[in-house]
Image (cartoon, rainbow over all chains, first blue to last red; front, top):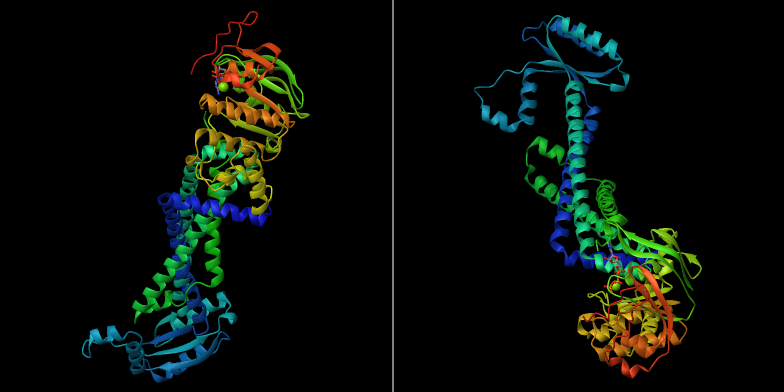
Length: 301
Length: 250
Ligand SMILES: Nc1ncnc2c1ncn2[C@@H]1O[C@H](COP(=O)(O)OP(=O)(O)OP(=O)(O)O)[C@@H](O)[C@H]1O
Ligand SMILES: [Mg+2]
């Protein structure tokens, strides 16, 4: 039998046994799918988050908020100090009115809720676009301290600080997702192992007949290994399917929520989808190989 | 060629299944293996096809040392040995064709070739027309003939039969026996374990008698003709030093 024929034979046997044992097989597929879904879900969130933070990198600003009573000369001085170092590209003054417009634009619901009367007065500012590649951290920190001390400066806000927060959050999500997914995947591999072993026990007398007529272990165990592999593949595919469904629902519901539109910006790349299915397949393969070591498949009589 | 050199088989718990058996069976020979229940007949057969290994001693089968053979080689040994059991051991969810032609299948024979081969061996046992039946659709005698066809599919040099007629009534037993003898006449070594002394006496041939794991007799009996085998007879004589019981009725 050629390898291809053997694989086809294994697949036929595996499918027949999965149909015959559909409850247990379903359980194996579902646990596998669940674990991969969790991992893939977290991965999707963090992938979108990092893409977003990357795109923000080009438009990072350093905002210098002004005291409400800052003198025009002091403002000019601040502007000059801001545009001086090489890591600031261009500077711009933002008046109180402009700040208000920007806020209403970014958070229309908040603005509406607050109403005209109870508005908080937003401070005017001078802002400069950061060129991240030009930054020398030590000099930057010193420079920011000096800016803070200037006359008329109320506070200095570095966009990079909250970008860092987002990045930290994103990698935390990724780590938590990986850990959780790994634990669940181990559980899934064990479930697949148990299900495959259960099947193998049911076929124990058939197995002994196959060995009797001279089948090598490759042919004796191949169908069972294939069964684990197929369960893992199905689990991976179901996880992707489920995630896609979640994604479709989430994007439909996202509406004006900034977070939702960010984390459900794009679906996983095809390569990531393939990787997830392959992880499922590997878990199934390992589970089944472990569960049907030769010693496990010997009749007790 | 099968040779045993001082073969001992102990089971955990101290049960002595074979106790220093030395014997030689030539290619094409017809050998009956008999003795009371628990004498070690099944154990002896199992050692030949390496279902079990001896505690001590050497076993040569077709020039290969079965006792020390690595596990990975066992399948190739078994392809040259056909085995038939009292309990047929067919795969119930597979058709007669699939049962019989599993080995050709994994050896790479096409469906056409397999069907051809299966038809031929099933023809030898008169069942060529039942290719697509399932075992449970066949009578006991027919199932045993399918099992025999499966044993013969790879043209084995040795055919082992462990009480092949134990589950069958006398007439069907006779039928299976005829088929086994026919295989032997065509040149296959036949080693048949049985309690049925009437059969042995009727067929005649070499008879090995085991008792409590010891080979207590090795003799040649002239046959009396098969038709009389249906008559229940007690053949097994008490051997020197042995306490052989008349055949047990089941
Ligand atoms: N797996 C085993 N574990 C322990 N003892 C065993 C095992 N198999 C066989 N024996 C013992 O070895 C001895 C020989 O058994 P064996 O099955 O070879 O006898 P037998 O001649 O085939 O008997 P029968 O005619 O009843 O089939 C018996 O005493 C039996 O109890
Ligand atoms: Mg026996």
